[in-house]
Structures are given as C-alpha cells and as structure tokens.
Image (cartoon, rainbow, N blue to C red; front, top):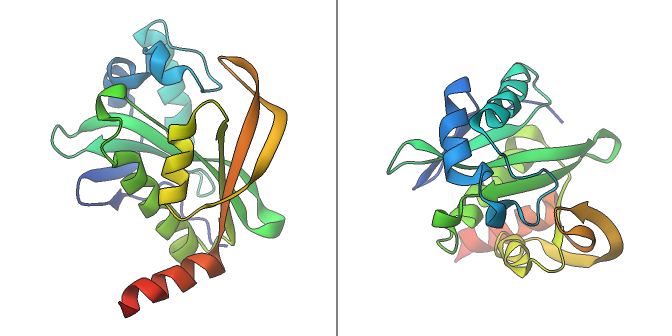
Length: 192
C-alpha cells in the first residue's frame, strides 16, 4: 500500500476533500447537531458549534498524515460540506481498510452516499493499493447496508452485540469487498 492521505476526489455531484477549519459551521448545521443523523453513530450529537469546531480541528491536524483519510463530502450545488467519509481503521498486515460515512438528513435517499463511497472504494483500491475494504452498520439501520450493497460490498455476517452506538449495544452487519472482486466487476462493466 502507498498511503496518499485525503486527496481531493470528485464525482458528478460531489467533491471529497480534507476538512478545513471553516467546515465546522456547515458540519454543525448540516448533520452533526441532528439526533436523527447521529442515531446509529458512535459519537454523540453535537450540542454546540464549539464542539464541532474542536472535532474539525482534530481532523485538520491530521491532514498532513498520509495514512489519515478523513474527507468532507461537498455538495457541488452549494459548495459546502453535507457529510463525511473516512477510513475508520487500518490493518496494514492484510491491507484492510474499514470505511465509515455520515450524511445530513436533507441529502438522504438521493444516491449521494453511494456515489461518494464508490469513488472512495475506487481510490483505495486503485491508488492506495488496499486489498480489502469493509464497512459495518447497526442491524437496525438497513439503509446503510443498502449503500454497501450498491457499492459492491458483499454481506459477510452478523456480529451479535458487537457494537455500541447512541442506541446502546447493538448487533453489527458486516459487508466487505476484495480488490480482486472489484477489478473483476470493473472488467465486466467495461466489457458491456
């Protein structure tokens, strides 16, 4: 693997880029202060913009670390952050990355998270050289699992009472994709 950090990525409707301090206000407004958005997340709903500013500052500090991948999801229509996507954990010895994402409620059910995650998957496999990508979600949050499936991840199993989020201890559904599977699927798509 060759770590490249939170390089700017772009899709038809989105830009993914490293966070900057000015992202705190729209992050607080667009998703971090919404208990419905944070319901299945591991961090609490932000109670003030000051809390969000501290979180963003901690991410900005890591921008120079090539092994840190924390992107703001920018909606091109407004050019402001509407969510985030990141590599949550690494297992270097097997080339594995766990990805997590969050998006503001106003942008749910529009294919935005799928569009974003698909580009991050491409980047991690093709440019960073990751071997395996996985993601997991609370079993009571099936919409997150649908995003994973649409991005080509396969259901790998249920981890009973293996997670904890704002709902308490929860069962986690795990989805994964290997670089070989991704390349084979891309080859099929190119041949059509």
